[in-house]
Amino acid sequence: MLKTIKISVLALVSGVILLLIAAGAQAAPTKITFLHTNDVYEISPKRGKGGLAELMTLLQAERAAAAHSITTFGGDLLSPSILSRKFKGAQMVELMNKLGTDVAVPGNHEFDFGPEVAEQRFGESSFPWLGANVLGKDGKPAAGLTAIHTIGVGDFKVGFFGLLAPETATLSSPGSGISFAPLIDTAESAVKQLEQAGADVIVALTHMNIADDRALIRSVKGIHLVLGGHDHEPITYYERGVLIQKAGYDAHYLAAVDLSVERVEKRGKSTVEVLPQWRMLSTRGVAPDPKVKPIVDAYNLKLDEELGQPVGKTAVELDSRRSTIRTMETGFGNLIADALRESVGAEVGLTNGGGIRGDRTYDPGTTLTQKDVLSELPFGNLVVLIELSGGDLLGALENGVSEIENIGGRFPHLSGMTMVFDPSAPKGQRIVSAKVGGAELDRNKSYKLATNDYIYGGGDGYAALTRGKPLIDPSGGKLMATVVMDYIAAKGTVAPKLEGRVKSR
Image 1 (cartoon, rainbow, N blue to C red):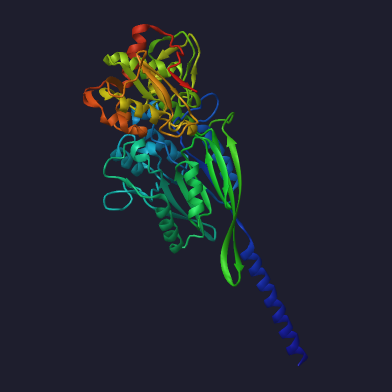
Image 2: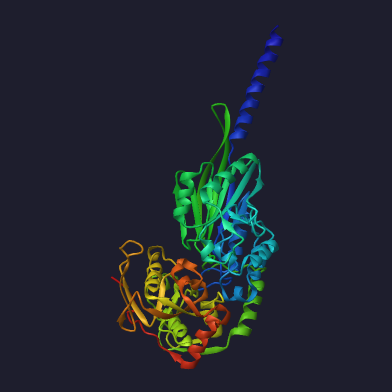
């Protein structure tokens, strides 16, 4: 009898120990490190920041320190840059493959060369591109995209879905065969699909502004992490217990998110809890990876050999930084608008700041090369001449300053006219005054306007320009970059001034 009791007690103790061990094993969290970048256009550092060879060095160090890591990309890769103008984004796919990317969402610039090129580049990628709301005419993800994707990590399954800003329809050239489904409805459906597929952790890869990311978290349950793009700023936002993380642009930073994932029992039901920690790692001063650097150098050498020819000089500082070219009159914007207007004999020249992409300054005395101009104007836009009513011209100006608080790319640079606007006024009512050739703009008069084919087609919200009568349409237009190079070459030395063409009140 005593022996039986001892055995029973021993069995009970053993069982308790096993239960404790099992509970401990179940409670032990797993750390998953997400390594994220977005909006990468340049392959080399600028002003000591960025560079894909430098990014690879950071990636290698983070992967070596992590038990589990996933490398993600938040959109805008294939364009714009002068290299992408030449290779149509093929160089970016080659390098992102080399960097070991695991999963990506497209950005609006993935469609700059049209849906056919986008689909080709997606197919050349060694990683999936996710676009749950990017739909073809059959209602399924278009251009070789998929809606969802899962990756096994230890005892957990991580599910991903991708969302792209619906305004891509006007920001880029996805074609009439692609539509963009509503963000919230699409996200709710994708979360359900991933849950049914057994995903323990759900990550939204997004390319949209931070306001839409926040609205996504407020509206859709079941998302544990948002890794985004589009804003061009390194952003960390904690919305209702869900981390939203963006890494800026051009690989200036690598965003690292350590997600602690733990399966716990609550009220007899197994559930997964996550806790994020995050870091922003700068590429400044980082040594380039020796395996990636030769690929970068080879592409740059090809470009320098072809485009290093001088065009002319600047006698003044030229500023094409994003923070200025999208918010105020600049000498560089005036130069481009003047070149457009004079090339076709127009009364007014208008171009959008978002089409000027160099994001740099040029010191007085700098010799400007073909590469410089093409780096500033990488989209391959054409110069068009249209006849436009004064009312529609005013509407175009209103659109141009409608997103200034968000540093919108639609900001106008003008030639042959001036305008004053009030940024505090409601959108659509911000223009205080406008003059053409020194005379007040007449709503009922027609004006000859030189612009680029992108905004003439309604891009960046310029719907008013689509009502213009074409005098030189895109089929007869010259390449915008060529027009600007010819303008600089004809003058030899340029010295554009700030003349109060666009003033805020």
